[in-house]
Image (cartoon, rainbow, N blue to C red; front, side, top):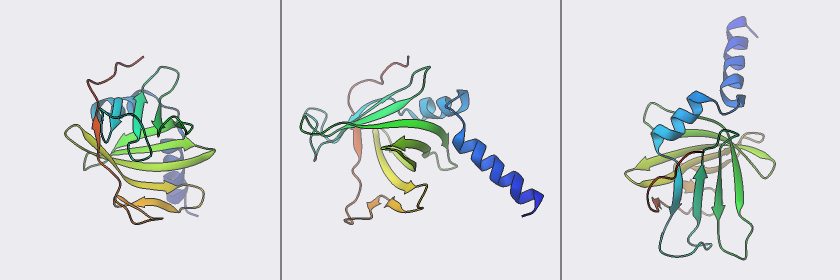
Length: 151
């Protein structure tokens, strides 16, 4: 492997393995990722109405997906975040012991998962806004109320 390739690989590792610092936090804030999001804000969390709650904290940022009282919330720890040239939010998260890379699109007060890739296997869970396992499009989630304050 050439020196140029080594430097490139190290730069990518640093970009996605670094703790959530000022630049990733800025990406989350400028994207407007914080707060609560749902398909229907006036209805409780359910399998067909997931609620996503995003909080930024000094100790680390995370988001939770709630799918109703019968289910344990899905907890995601944000490892890294940046914006791409088109304005989408690129996240590296830890969920259920696995590292995933997510691409989140935003239109107005709605967000949508456009891509979800398992880092270890390279398997795409979502590609171009379509869930690989069932071919269903990922939903547009709407912001529920004002942006949540950061802690």
